[in-house]
Image (cartoon, rainbow, N blue to C red; front, side, top):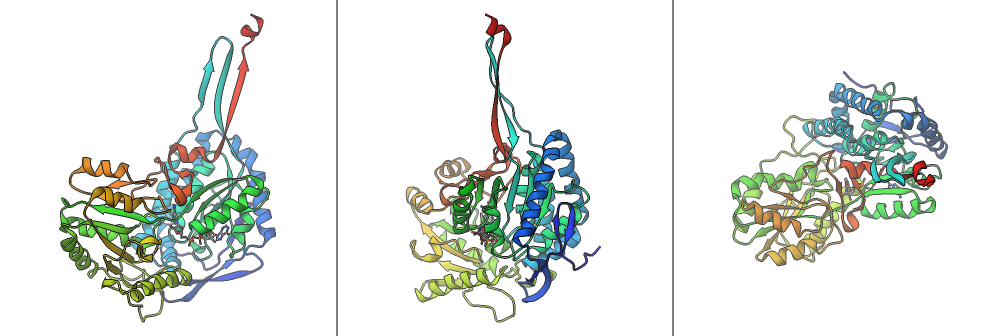
Length: 477
Ligand code: NAD
């Protein structure tokens, strides 16, 4: 099956072309692959009004019914996984296998979220009174997604947001709107009109959403800098916000690891999705006793990885998704070169068309270098040497970020103890990037506010409402 090349917004259950459009490029060759509608403020108003109109009936449904809708959406995504993955590769750049994981992950997430439940807490049930706290939906949610995982990160919001009884207006990144717009076509006849609206647009659309008077909550995934603007803008109407932001995740590799075995895992921890993962390993601290052999093993493995157009057989790493990000990564590489740091591989710009940057690994640059301190969000990794655990924990925590991190070692108990000392929302031992729709995921410090996933994530789409009933028997006494 193949999709047609018309991309339309979903507003109030109808597909709309919009009055203007913008070009979407394939980052592997910089060719235009489609035009996405460029929503106007009036389009946004209509999408919000449609979501508002759908809210009473949707929120009144028994939660079991909303579960069924989420599962039906998941099945529809799976039935279209092939064309969705091809389209995603062409606009995002990631290889087909990774695109399939992004699309399939979205379906998995909707199913997983649908297994959650809204709790009712009985605060008091005495002779005098009964008191309970239940959870009620907020209303209309504005969901804003980034370009690195367009499908799964949208599902992070759609699943719990709709399950809790809210309706939604979803905006994909202008760099990757097409797959999300096709998702709208796929679910158009599955969900009641207006429950999920999908609109695309340029740089103004996000700020219009965060300042919209009739949106009750903004769920945002993107950079820390933009997250701060979202929070500021949302404060005018006291919108609830969930902010999933940037990271600079450390990995700490203990000396008792099996060097040959972990080298490949550590490579992918840093370079999966071309480093464009919020929870990619962005600084790798390796114990001095194994630094040289592990460094050499990672570099040897890296040389076997094929970089290219994600639609070509055998490609493991695609291009950077977009020109601004490409320029940011090149700027960090340029800075590292100017400072004279040692490159183990990479560091050159590719001559081919497209936003390609070769895998770039640096040998123990200074702790205060930009390449260590900043979120690179690209295929560039500094390897760093450590000797003492107190020292490496202090270095790992010396950042404004606190999203993820990982500890690698055969002594799992010791690794677990070190994990507890890392100031991040999630810390893994001997793996990385494992997330679950039933576990809380979020950032400490400037990596975010609130969580997604698990019951805690679901509750962020609700208000607590406490109901108190004085008992007649008590009043009479
Ligand atoms: P970005 O902040 O540039 O954009 C994210 C989204 O916000 C896009 O849809 C964009 O159009 C929109 N936007 C831009 N300006 C806005 C504004 N002023 N108000 C409202 N919306 C606005 O981020 P990006 O470059 O798309 O994504 C990369 C960043 O996202 C990285 O920092 C990465 O770490 C982070 N990220 C975090 C998580 C997480 O779960 N914590 C997951 C993925 C990516």
